[in-house]
Image (cartoon, rainbow, N blue to C red):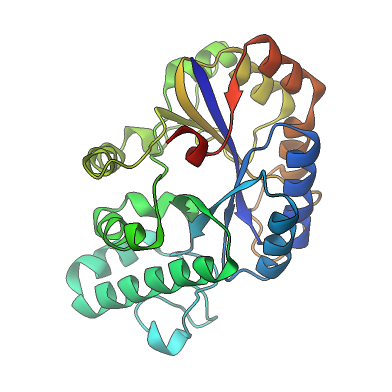
Amino acid sequence: MKRLVVTADDFGLSREVNEAVEQAHRDGILTAASLMVSAPAAADAVARARRMPSLRVGLHLVLVEAWPTLPTAQLPDLTDADGLMRRDMERLGLDLALKPAARRQLSAEITAQFEAFRETGLLLDHVNAHKHFHVHPLIAGAVLATGPRYGMRAIRVPREPRAVLRLAEPGATPRAALDTAPWAALLAVRARRMSLTIPDRTLGLAWSGAMTPPRVAALLANLPDGLTELYTHPATAGGFPGEAPGYAYAAERDALVAPEAITILAQEKIIRGGFSDFS
């Protein structure tokens, strides 16, 4: 059986992102979105989600490069001079290992983001993190320790099989992604021990920001059996604060509403939903 969760990350980042999420859910194949609870357009995202009860919404933890939930004065080891979470992921990971204070701040910020999500009143479909930083063993430990108190039942494990990508785009040489990292494998083991739902594979890593209509259609046409998460970054336009340089936001929105993608889902008898629908 082919089961599929189609996710939009960065829900709440901007009005352009939120508009694309609504379009792709109402008129396309999108089934879920991951909410940045403290991003500039988070309130607008929550309002749209409440109008679309069939959209499954999860928590997109922000631990790097974006807006924290707690005041920056409470996060001196995690934030920069601009009041954002630090961008230097490698150094931050080392600081978490070496500084007990940084780990305490991390735990407090993760808890604050879960609290903020609970205050929306939305059901928690899944959890993941900006830049997949939740695969870091110390961050994963904090998320796994905190999440169950807030109803966490599913978590993204970013592992992408090259074989599927090559079937979808013959001759492609996808760039290395996190699915080769032992941290992702460790996260899968830890999540299974807690009986959390995880995808058998996650599509969208190697072509992050470039999930064009032909690529998404080809991935759907070559979807293996099991539970797959296909994640995207749709927006109606670029030019908003926090956007990733070079991302084809509008093309990713177009991929989610393309008639070809909708037709393939029907032909292949692919069952869509959120993680909570498959747990």
